[in-house]
Image (cartoon, rainbow over all chains, first blue to last red; front, side, top):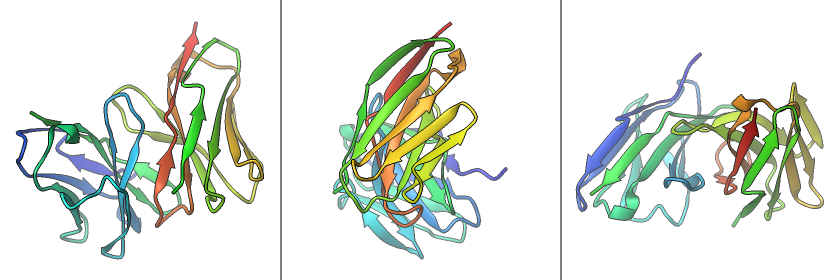
Length: 110
Length: 113
């Protein structure tokens, strides 16, 4: 069964550094998403992406965040200058009829 | 924007009993309501969903009901087993694709053997 994959599984970075989180959505899916989940809290929507452009974004997704689909398979989330409060699990998801989540990347900002 | 409220935050039941988790949503345009199960350190897994054109859906021990007028939807788990212990999230979306999914705060379910 096809799955959404994410790399790396854990990323540790220093405050102020840039990070890129990578996702490979399921190949025939059309919509792609990034969510984040701070430890012990709910899953929060960040951004949705369709047809090579952002279709919707949340208040969390400010100028420090960007997304890209650099080729036909990868979908990336970039955080330009990380802050301590960016520490969270970041989930990628994709949809054809149902939404499937990737395993997540745990981002730790020190 | 959409807001999803979920209750209770913690639920403890005896094995074999039923568990009910309730959610309300604010945006009447929402038309898709998935439920996710999340085990510790794992990704959310879709367990059942319901669209606004139906009032109830069942899959083995799991059922979901939707009251569009009241903007309520509920998850029912019957004959609970210890492996049902996890955090359950309800969510609301305006579509299965293209629009954001707003999650409830989660219910931590403990099933005691």
